[in-house]
Length: 122
Image 1 (cartoon, rainbow, N blue to C red):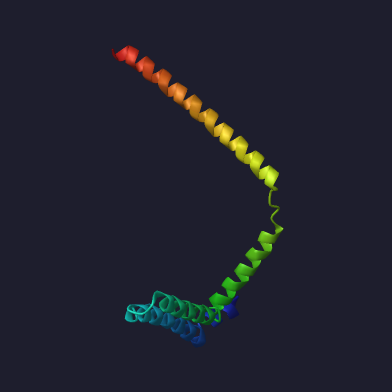
Image 2: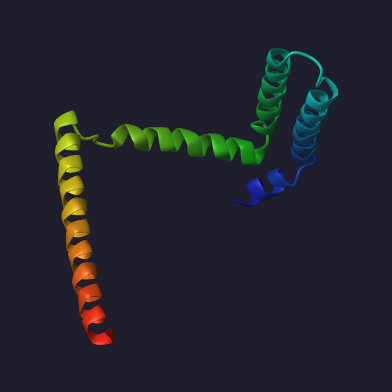
C-alpha cells in the first residue's frame, strides 16, 4: 500500500498526467484552430489525440488501477444470468398491467374525491 502511494507521487506519474492533459488541451485547441476544415478530418484528429491521451493516462498508477477495475467489471458482467426473451416479455406485460390498474385506481379515486369536494363546497 505504501509502495503504491509512493508510485502515485513519483515524478514520472506526474509527468505522464501533465502529458495526457496537454494532449487533451492540444486536441481541443487544434479542433478550434482547424474549424474551417472538414468535420470528418477534425473528428479523426480528435479521436487520434483522445486515444493517445488515454494511452498515456493508462500508464499512470491511477490509470492501471482503472484498467484493472474495468477488467473486473467485465468479469462480473459475464457472471450475470440474463433473462430469456420469454421472461422479458412476461415481466414487461405484468409491469404494464400493474401500471394500467394503478392508473385506473388513482383516476377513480381522484374522480371520487373531486366529486365529494364539489358536493361539500357547493
